[in-house]
Amino acid sequence: MLIEKEIHSEFWFPQQIIVSQDLKFEKVKSKFTNYCKKTQKEDFKGRNYSNCLGWQSKDIMSKDFVFEYLQEFINQSLSSQFNLKPNTNIRIDNFWINISPKYASNDYHVHNGSHYSGCLYVQCGEKSGNIKINPNLNYNTDWMDFLTEDYKNAYHIHPSVEIQPKDGMMIMFPSYLMHKVNNNLENTERISIAFNVSFL
Ligand SMILES: [Fe+2]
Image (cartoon, rainbow, N blue to C red; front, side, top):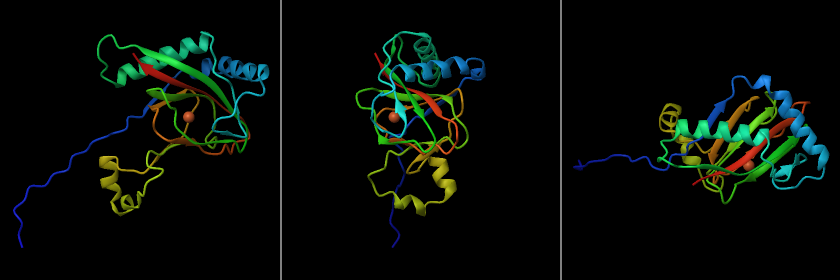
């Protein structure tokens, strides 16, 4: 039976992950590393959220050079990738340090209460642990396995994505996206600075 028809697809709900790279990060890396290690020394207990084996600082309240750097880098990255309405302000709600020795990881979590969240990678290697973002964690996404790779890539239909961090890379994503950090398999510590931002 030939059905008279009109069929089309509508693609909604894209997730925008913004990846920025400071091309001259090597020049400031030791300053950032020292800052993170000094903060750890001052509060070795830190706090426990999603971190397994790793150390996480409490929220850093001072408006120091790291705050200034983050504000600048976040602002430039978001305003270059979004078409923001005039007079939109971007506010850093909070930021904190993660130091993960070998085998440390972070469990799946979301950052409630903010708009965008992200991370600046200060020290990592190839096997320091990818960030895995999975908005479909609690859902059956097996049907995606039946789609061709070309189709999946063309329309961004994936259950999750993994991004390999690099020194000086900043990754930002909507705060409601579930994400985790895989185990650090390097012998060196993985050091990163995470943050939440809101638009005002
Ligand atoms: Fe996180």
